Length: 416
Image (cartoon, rainbow, N blue to C red; front, side, top):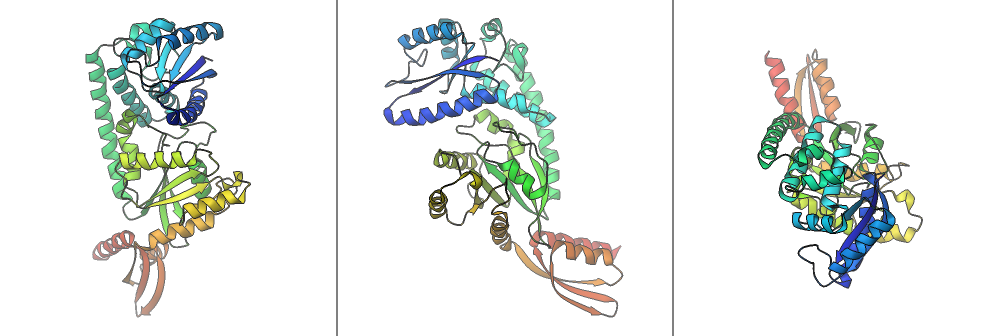
């Protein structure tokens, strides 16, 4: 396990507290990546040193700390330029990465499907093309570890042309996947579509499992879910929606990941309703809510309906905290994906959004076509039934697009 020292630079006392929280999150990211956080350093200075971000005195201090504590890796919360990475590495004689490289490394570790692996590799190559080209030898000499997984050390040493060729190949793979996903999404048009979105580790997968018995992997570390997973969810006896779990967000999500995960994130863009899942027990709840909202805007979802779902209320033992959240965020749902508390209220809240998309249509079908009659009962609420001779007339209330598709299918079936 690599011994890691974390560094952040704040340019004002106001920025200091945000950077302190960021270092706590960086610790969790480091542990998720398999590193052992030995020490954290927060420097406050009026500006950034162009060549090394931190001042010369702090560089000398870092070098000594690395020697004393046998540090293998320095991770900066601040984004570093290629020049800064090279200079800090040379002066401390310890490998250096920044927060973006750390997040990309975690994604690389957790990628399981061909799509996720291609998306992560593309993001890493785009990052390394602009930040690490020319430093492959230095990194190779210092050995592997956090920040070098994914494309790997071998790819750090390939030239710009080969990186461009690999990026082009990955883009072709992901374009093909985009087309396949578009076909899947077209087939889902008759259903009301809901996507789970939220900060990483907010409990989206746990909520997905409770609602649909999907058996999505749940783990106590960040970014356990990278691939989208869609399952049917019965809101009432006659109304079923499609629920999709998606990759978690994080503060300043690397733009390389946003770009390469375009296909996965399209599940959120194409949703009729977004459930913004929030860890209600998180001490940094307001900033994380804002980070998710910013990311939704970043991926062009700012105009979609959003229902805030405050999860993990079983972890809150002070009623005033819940009351305060309810006052501040009215028309939200408060649930526990662990105990099931509040799930019925969540379904009721979802149903309110669905009702805007409900319509009533009348169908006349031969009595002999039990398959078509059953399909109407399965996809809507039959509010009137009249039988005359060999025909049945059903008045059905249901999701508009679903009833339109059934109507088209019935006409086609009766013509054949």
